[in-house]
Each structure stands twice: as structure tokens, then as C-alpha cells.
Image (cartoon, rainbow, N blue to C red; front, side, top):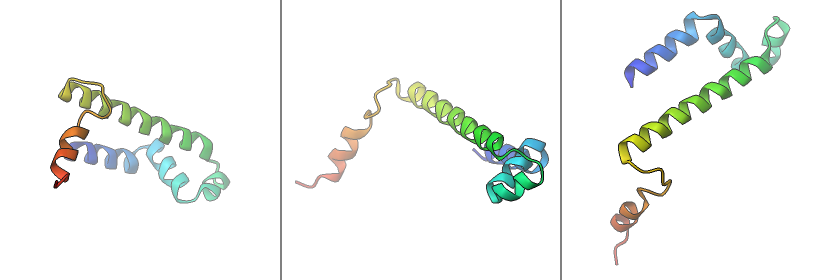
Length: 83
């Protein structure tokens, strides 16, 4: 997990795409006035977020062996009920 944080931090601070994303997130109008495309950076941010969610879903399916979104619910409810 620490390696992912470090890689993301490096990407945001050291690459052109990361700097565009930071500039757009901080001030979209200012980024537009400097010649950047806020729409493109926003699209890239949502695309990367979707890819990360998809990867997390694949890891969850591999670890649990099921694709059921409520796979962990029965255990949680059994522990929380006190009757």
C-alpha cells in the first residue's frame, strides 16, 4: 500500500499529467486560462478512479472467491445483534 501511495505521489508531482491534474483540481478556471484543458484532466481523473475501483473489485473477488456484493453482511449482522 505504501508503494502505491509513493508511486501516486511521484506521478502527481513529477509528470506533466499529474501536474495538470493538480492544477485543474486546485483551480479549474486558472488552469483553463493558462492553456490547460480542465475537461481532459477531469476525464482522466474519473478514468483512473474507475480503473482503481475495478482493480479493487478484482482483488476482492480473488480473495473471497465470490462476486456477491453482500458476501460479508451475515457475519457483520451476527456480531452486532445482542438478542
